[in-house]
Length: 508
Image 1: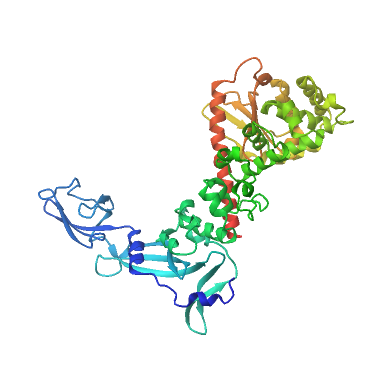
Image 2: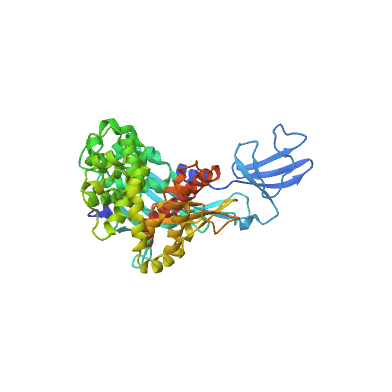
């Protein structure tokens, strides 16, 4: 909160006629028509006058006979209008919308949050518009102040009241009962007449909601403009949504490379990253500063997660270079990690370097898998039964294939035995919620193991294998198609989760 915040209200700029007209133009326009011979005569709320449209005089490709509630283009002003029969209750028409009206004054940017109403309650066909103040944001380069429009019992009228918090727009400004609806920005170009003209607000977004969010973050971190100007929009978006960790960005630096913690040769790679991928990249170059195949390493770490790699480091005491030198591929890394985890849980744990990096990984994996299955604990069954209900939202099906969640550890072990792959060693990790094992079945053979899929808690397919991990034959086309479609399904779940998190962050 700015000291003496009420001084910002002195000579407060008002919304001008041009801005009022801009608000009115965002509302639906109507054509109130009456039938005449061979056509219609109508009042266009965009033209603000009566017009005619008939088959014997018109030169436009617009139907001469209109229908109630149909959308047309007025041939005179070119605007889209909703046709309304003049005798069918136009007085009940009402619309409302939310707007952010920007005004520059004394190098400050004033952002009025307005709720506007369009009404046809008069005797004419011309609508009335009513504007209702809700909030006011005042932005300076290093400060901001938020006000709300509230009733003062002493003065007996509404006044702007300064607020102590710097929250963004309230939820009603961008959410409705039917879903997402954004506030509309009016005259955002006013920012170029303030000391925020280099903020890159309009480059970042044309949406009013995210513009306000962006400015709030920009006030705290003016260097945000460098990130946007350089094209790191995915990272900037996550910063604005509050999804970033304060340690990821070095805000005090004016050098973009140092600010993001990236190497010059990796700029184009990082431009495609979101904030989580940047975190993975920073982790990778911290541990492997001279790596040439950093893109592939980031891809592998992002797929499994930093905690996954750290677990391998903790189990083996190997460096990242040694880990990737031995593992080399996503599939081998996954199998090695499974082997290490299972071996660490056995009596005696992991032995010397020969057992840490076995020459025959498959044979070593199968050996510890058999021992792990034998020593599986009974309490896993209760955990897995509880997880069965939790995993239902992850299930997906096509015309030919369905998915099932395991109801017991025995089901997972039998799945591995019948398909002769290693899923039996995943029982404990699945029971603990560290990963998710699901079964793919043919609809006409729902109880016969076909393929097994492992899904991370970040909605990524880690692996999907059938009999002997496809050592004797390639994956069927129906499984390849299923994986693609299931990946899209998981991405939708992930986006829904991120949206819920963003709304929770906003409303917290």
